[in-house]
Structures are given as C-alpha cells and as structure tokens.
Amino acid sequence: MTLLATVSRVRIETKRFGELEVDEARVLRFDDGLPGFPDDRRFALVDARDGDDVFYWLQSLDDPAVAFLAAVPWLFFPDYEPELPEADQALLGLERAADALVLCLLTVHRDQQTITANLLGPVIVNQQTRHGRQVVLAESRWPVQAPLAAAA
Amino acid sequence: MLVLTRRANQSIVVGRDVVITVLEIRGDQVRLGINAPREVAVHREEVFAEIQRENRNAAAVSADAAALLPAPRKR
Image (tube, rainbow over all chains, first blue to last red):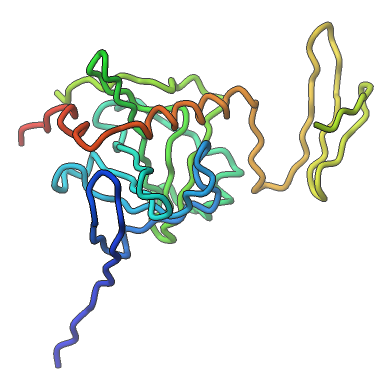
C-alpha cells in the first residue's frame, strides 16, 4: 500500500511578487512581531535565489507590503557568534542550538549599491516549532549595519 | 507617561511580575536592577530603537534588490 503525503500549500498576497504559493511548513510565527512591525505575526520563508540556503525573503502574511531580505550570516561573517539571552531562549523554547535557524535582516543602500546585515538583532527561529523572534544582542558589539562582501 | 520619584533602594513594580529597583545613584548615572520573569526581555531603550529603525530601513527593500546580492560561490 502506498501512502501519499500531502503537503499543505498556502496562498499569500504580496506587493512585490503578486500571489505566491508556499508550503505551510515555511510559515513562521512571530508572537511579538518584529520591532517596528508589531502586527506582522506570520512570515513565509521564501528562497530568494533558488535554494542556495543563504538568502531568503521573509514575507509577511499579515501585510502584503511588508517583506525583508535575510541571509544566513556565516558565509559572510564566519566569526559571528550570537549569544542568545535567556529570556529569548525561554520564549522560543530553544533547548538545543541545532534547532535554531539564524537569519540576519538585510538593508539595501541604494546610493552606494551596498547591502548590510543587521548582526545586532538577528532573527532566530526554532525549527521544531516554527516560532521565531528578533533577538536584541544589546550587550554585544555586533554592528547593526555590517557590509556584505562578495562570497569568496 | 507616569512619573515617579525614587531614592536609592526604592523600587517600582510594573504589572504583576516586574520589579525595578534603584540600586545606586552616582553623579548623573542611575544603576537599576530589574527583576522579571525569565521570558520577559529587558533592553536599553536606545538599542531597541536602533533595531526598530534598521528594520524600517530593511523593509524598504524592493523586489529587484535580489539582483544586488553577492554572486554565489562557484561549486
């Protein structure tokens, strides 16, 4: 007997990309939204460049106009070591570092044609629960605008 | 804004679970102790504001920004 697994797909409206269909498994919940975006509680993780596992769009399901470019930081910042404050670990129910997906939001600076990553406030997602939050590494010296150099 | 005046070693209770104590006053600096449940995040306001500002900058990204991303590593 063959069992077929069905993947739930979700249709979302986006300002930048029109209508998108994403796997429900790619929908993340942010109980506190993001600083500056408290009402955006659900985001879809969308590949920015076909499955390179580095760049993603975080597209809000609550507001089609809200989206962020994000990157897994270590390709560009191999020494990056975000230390999660206890409060955030507790809020995310993170018991093992391996369960965490770390993404840094990118800012595109049009005049200089440069992109910077926010290392001071990484987005941390518990991959087991798909809950995420933006963590403020207030006690650290990580920059809020770290320039992305080309990958070697 | 609620305004309260405290001396050293006096406290303020916020909600049911957060207690802020003035530990020491030295010159123009106040040392504060925060007692809060593990899951309540506490931050210096200017750092939170910095993250908020940068998020707004980041959210201004347009769809064609992906073209500016560094080229992928050749495998």
